[in-house]
Length: 616
Image 1 (cartoon, helix red, strand yellow):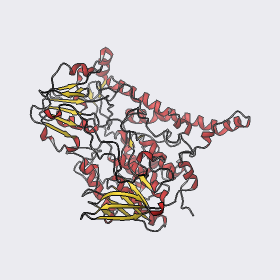
Image 2 (cartoon, helix red, strand yellow):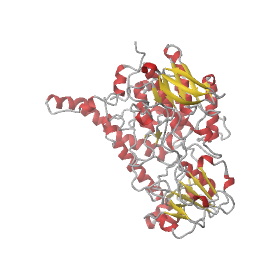
Image 3 (spheres, helix red, strand yellow):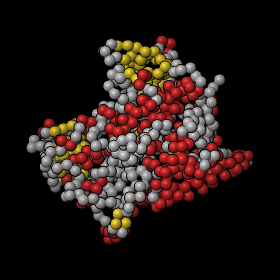
Image 4 (tube, rainbow, N blue to C red):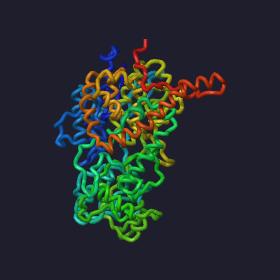
């Protein structure tokens, strides 16, 4: 078999790795795999569209691949839970070297066309070689992993030419643009916009303004050290937020009826907003009293997790009242010396006049009323407006695109030889580990190593509601339509592969592995304990790295509120559902009173699935 991989970002690299590993693991003929990368290095957007001082918003424990962890002391940041962007690129370089991927990677090689081979079986990849020549390569399958962030979006603003410095965030290379006494306006309120605002407000600028269309929702990426009774809590070494979810009864051994009715979403929506209201007197985001997205629901939005700038959010909008003031004297968010600096919010710009004054659209937000009272003449405008809808100009007409991939957002039913790796975006989590799950499942599929029962369950026509529990429900008009819940989506792919261990599988490894499995997030390594991609090193990582992460959680904000509370609710509810649909529903059907046909079609009622084996 010959397989083409397009793109040398994390998704492309991990797909190449599993393609090369399949022969030795499953006893199939060696796969001839070629990876095509248009740029001169690997890493994708992490190499070419990042900036100095940039830091990952997902922890290294969740972001790195299952069988290649970050050794202590490998990077200058030491044991920091979050890698710098440049360090992550170095990690990918190490990954390519460790698994001997480089002989299969073709740099400076741009794919210009992919078409069906004659007869419709197979594909022909047309590409431009480093020397400029055009060549073709016939293959049996194609993995597209070109990433979500390719074409910059720069909205039109009348009068923008009056501003001395205008750039897209992908062009930002350092603080040099933030001159002494300058006025900076940043358009957008995503994670990159928050980083830009932080760099600007901690430079010798005069004003920094964040402009938004419809608000955002800020969420912490690390459990904070709160101020309790006027004193900041000691550094307890709490784990990152994306590692704090427990699996037991949330994904593992969660009844399908509970999952598909989205009751868990309702709980987490209530819980999150309640916690924010308690901690910072607003339920609209972490320390966020302006640029509010009032109607958000947990099942709809992608959080903004770059929080370094949060202490500078202007406090003119903080209306606490007597109760709020009393509460803040007991527990509050951490404070820093702002040195008189702040970040203002504003609606979206309407135009820039002949004098270079920026005028913002009027609305009923509190920041709109304030911004009307000031004049801002920007010296720098940064478009942190993200990237356009995903496009695949190299795919010939008739090929599916990522939005057509209706089997786990990975391939189109009936056209499994075209896989889309890394095109889902998690709410809290990271794309690279989900790309690893996708690569594992896709390789099994193109090699016909999934049992027939698993293939049946993968079909969208088998259970149209199968994606209800992991797919976000974006509002009408939302630009990002491929959001998922990291924990749920990861567990679903593990079930599809037969890689989700049961409680009995885990207990034989001992107490520490069991605790890491039950109370840890859905790290990829957890799903290497069993299944087709079982790896002997997974047990040691679970016993050490993942177990220690669970131990690091603070008692109240970690073990009790993020673990014990959900488990105490979801566990009994799942048990009640199991009892009813195991013992009572058959009795109801015998009496001719109907039954839940759809639930009977759902596999994995016990929280794990059968292990795929090679088809004969």
